[in-house]
Length: 86
Image (cartoon, rainbow, N blue to C red; front, side):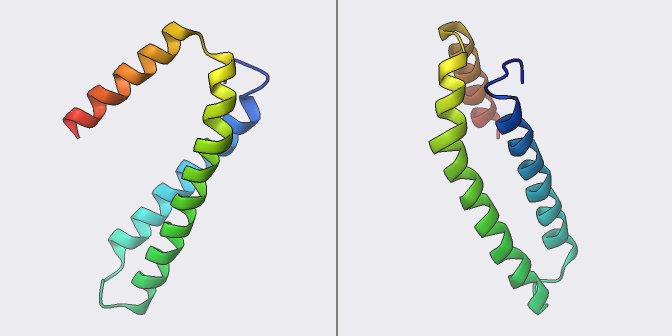
């Protein structure tokens, strides 16, 4: 969010994360036996795959241009640590 080049993609990504979180909440609140559960799950799958595609092919490419080597290393370390505790 600190760079003009990445502010709009960052806002877009944050909005998509919120939308995904809301879908997860809907799924958690819906009985698996309900036909709505499968509809919500399919919607979630579509949104997550769309988001991942955008991150890999657009957002991360742009972020790689504006982040320093040290910032990239810090992000990688934080990500690895988070995955180890998840």
